[in-house]
Length: 478
Image (cartoon, rainbow, N blue to C red):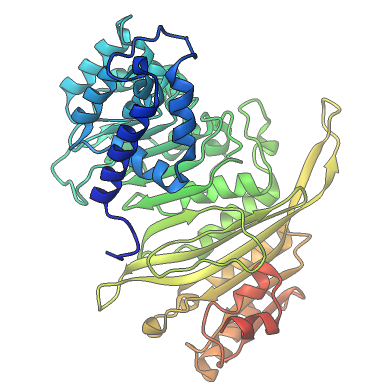
């Protein structure tokens, strides 16, 4: 450990010393004999709170971290019983994240929440986690979530990486499920089974402020990715708040992110009341089809999307992650990603390719209610092979079905630029062969360019496309 960083023991000693030091400065009533009536803000508590605010913010996070440490939680709980001032500041944080390790734990929590003496707990639980092998029957866990109005996260991911002996929990759509998940922002599921892709997307679409979807070993029936039946069953989804989509070992690594990103990028709001021809706009369909075409490699194992607001010059890539940086404004929406496949010969997961899609607001069209609907169109698409120098024996561009692009480009009337970018992983002969294949597929479409520079590593080509950098910026960054 870096000597400049205080150890956990040192932080704990500082915290205890600080408590003892401040207890001598507080009025006697604020120490072990503190009996301030509930709601009374006079006396020692303001002094305690003032002293707490004087601590550096990094110590705040350290101390909060101790509250979630099961090894010392009992000691902290005893401290809260003898110091009312301390309890009012910290006691709720003992329960912000609850982990249920068994069905018995679930029933105990249910009893606590139903008791008038402990019902206050419900207002402080923000995350509900289920331990290994503990994911109770649907009625019980959905009831627990409804009893926790402040709960924003559900996590059923097991600690073990592989859980082959655990029977998948089947999740079916119901009014009970919809009301249970409505207020959460993070849904993390492991070893679950949905009846179909349309049921899965409808479930996610009903979560109003959904920000994170993390699935591992989640399966569904083999619904085709492109079907109007899926769109007509997503009743309320806009997905505009989604910032993270991670899928490990799922039925498909592209189906869920393709629908979510396409809808968010084109500002499309699904509704079961829409007519069939309006259920999915042409631009939304085109993005879904394009992602299916480019993400078709069957060796892809994981799909990881991390969505953030990016600033000019900011770029994040790693061979271990599927990274997406999203930059958007009132008139511009962009998502950027990289693909992660199975392990290479050295056991390291390899990044296969990068993709950038920019969507711009094209205007407003009249609607039946007179309010008008915004229309969004794809303006730029860029594809590049991986920059991992250890994986030049694998060329992702070669695995793509470029003939599918032939029908996609005419559907994008405002497409300004479609780029296929290659770097030093390609020999000159290999590049020309790929270029001929791409240009033949797109019928020499005027917006298409295939670029190659053996002096630049793969992936670096995308940076100017992503964030409007020029060559001088690239040289300065090297």
